[in-house]
Length: 103
Image 1 (cartoon, rainbow, N blue to C red):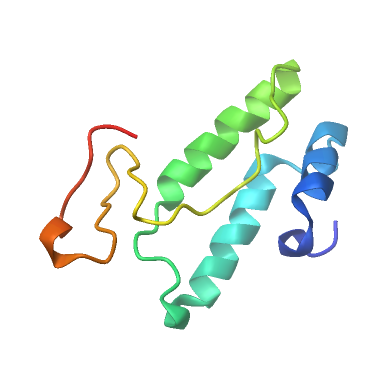
Image 2 (tube, one colour):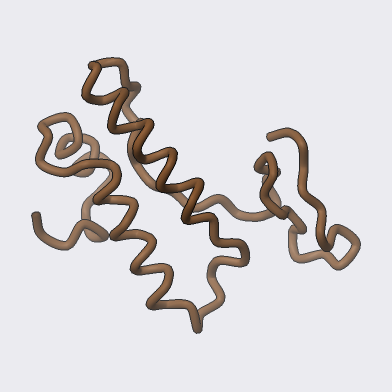
């Protein structure tokens, strides 16, 4: 498939459902783009292990026919939203090192 990072969400969803691409492939494309643009500092905390595990779980759900529309679509979350076990400091030194136990 062409450049996976240029797919719209709807096109990625459709490709996932047709089996033209896997969530793991979409995730690896996104992780590669994040890595190559590291100088931009757009991502404060990278979690490739979590992303890969979630992609594998999404692929299993899609294959089983038990997947909501956004299942398998990689996304980035701003660090002012708490993600369990991932540092969330909202660009504040007061929260430096904070790892929430909730989402």
